[in-house]
Image (tube, rainbow, N blue to C red; front, side, top):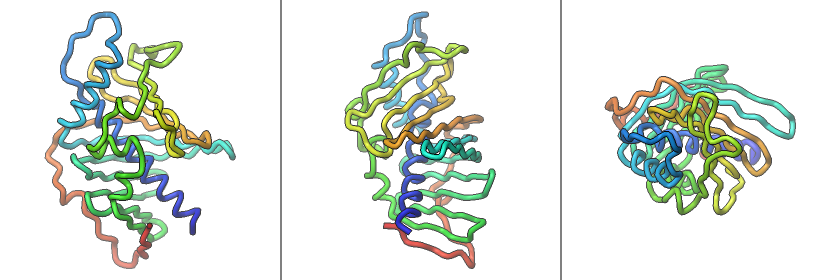
Length: 233
């Protein structure tokens, strides 16, 4: 049971990291940069500003998690929905259906095939890490991370920006974050991060829609009849 609790908590943390980064880079204000790279400080400033201005979003995603110890990669995909602040829904459609629903009070992980749901107070998630603290609106990215361009290349083959975020204090959940950012619209195209055990998670996003009017009601969850509910610490 303890092992399952660890896995569930790790999933809660993983999606918060992924969504928070997507929010912070979704729509940087229109800027005209010269052919030289913008400074990292300019990008970080835009991250904070855009996160604060984003009301809601919808996006498709694919997620790949590689477990180093067994050299196994699991791929999943689905749709993600967010409403600022502290409301989100990750709806996995392949290979198995499941939902992760988080609002200001409660977090739910629903596994449809297993007919089980895991319930947890959201506050314990909001306080569980550096990135989560920032994305919940209580932290500053520059205070907790050293941000730099990737080396030896700061751009990918299409000219998109490559950034690396290193926590000033490393945590088990996140030791390094890598981002690929669209050079024109500044959408986040891909992010990946490693944990202390060397396991890696990669998220790729597509079909991003901003500020479509999602309501808080959209992020409420009621387990279907016959589903067994487990309370998480």
